Image 1 (cartoon, rainbow, N blue to C red):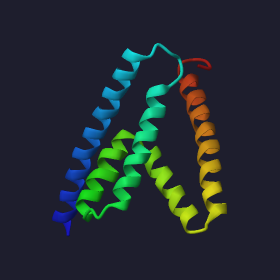
Image 2: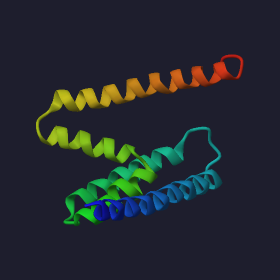
Image 3: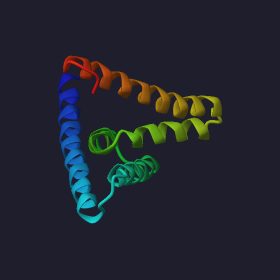
Image 4: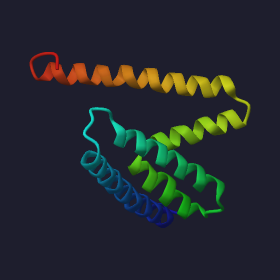
Length: 129
């Protein structure tokens, strides 16, 4: 069991590295193409990651391939894809209140968390950031 867990961990780590580098390259490409303060690369990453996880979820991949692609590659690329798939599963199951709570809770609580983290880190610099 430990050997299988280590093997899965290695595949996920490799996928995470590939996903992170892919996100970095996409960001570089968008920065080169668009001179804008709008986060186009992040939007494109979230959309393409959500599309990819939807496609992977619908295809008959084995457990190791799923972990490599969904947890590893797409986890490194964007966690928004996992959020999108989990929300879709709730909607497909008729769990509309849970889906709405997931969307609203994630957006609101993450904005509050990033603000609090920003304030806390700013306090270590000797003032608000």
